[in-house]
Length: 395
Image (cartoon, rainbow, N blue to C red; front, top):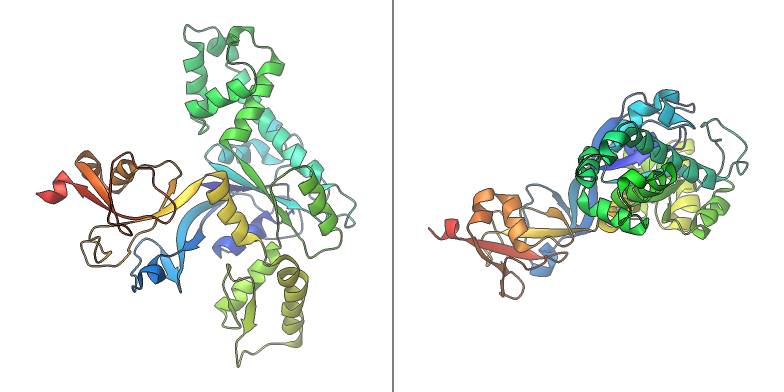
């Protein structure tokens, strides 16, 4: 799951609505989002149907003219304000949602037209880098107070490292994350009982970076001052994607209403013949084309979602089939499933994901492209189409 985070009025809820087409409250004032909203968006990948020259029949995903859409979960967390970790602005309630996120998309107002509290201000008058720094600080302080309140028990126990792991496991932070953060912080050989507050904060900040990787959706790129804000984010070395969530939402709704031919991965649109448009609507679409699509190559929403899963989480897409010749499942459906898995997942791992008995009886897998047998330890590659042969299937 990926969390959509940021301060109030930066465009988080608009981004979420554009990605999921779920209607949520959107307004020009702080705390419009009271409860975290959950919804399904899609990552896009090249479907192998055209490569193999087959007509596919997706079951767990969608194929749109050779583009496979794989469902993923997003959660829209309410805007955070300074001192949210203390509970200000209902902060603790929404920071709690972040514990379940595997990565975050931080929606930042690149135009600088909202202050740190989310209140409107003249474009360019607020530095978007402040938004990045403050939000990371809020999450770090939230983590710090969670761990610190039990630190005596954690640090002085017989197995302090295990106690620390147990405490952090509820935040979706596992042993590999913890070990890497300890090493990166220079604390792997220092006893927890000897840690000072600065050591704990340094460790937790690095742990947050590792376990909750974040990219920046530099939003409101159609407004004055946004390009300067975007460049400032890039100069900092941040992974930032130029974005205009409002344009994406307008285009997706226009496609729903039969006004345009638009798909999020297209980067362009066409007004459908016979579409009834007012002069105002035509001007709005023309502005989106000139200020957003031609300037930035797209609205950035789909790119941000894809980047969160494929880059931050190192995900790949694989296509398991039963009949390697027909590329079908037991019901005869061609290329029915697209699995989004972490890089490093093996053929045997995939077998267990599909069904426990398939994993337990795993013999080998077959690469549909080459016909080559693959061992259980074969690391899957993005776009693989494979059939799993098990003792169960051979009975």
